[in-house]
Image (cartoon, rainbow, N blue to C red):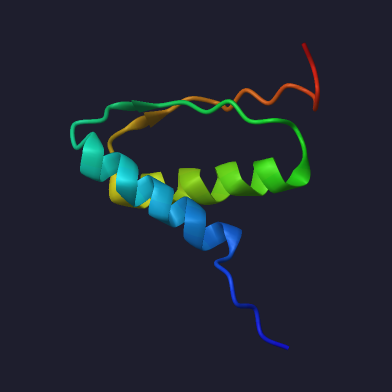
Length: 70
């Protein structure tokens, strides 16, 4: 069995690289994601990537409202 599309990790590392390419002076990073496994893992991968790429940036605790919350 072969997977022909990108994994979520690849997409989130790519998103982190895109952020630092477009905002090279970023100092603070925050996230709002829905509270379910895929979003939690996506934020984890993005946050870890940002810690490597921009170690001095402040990363705020993510906000994760329940799925379909108003």
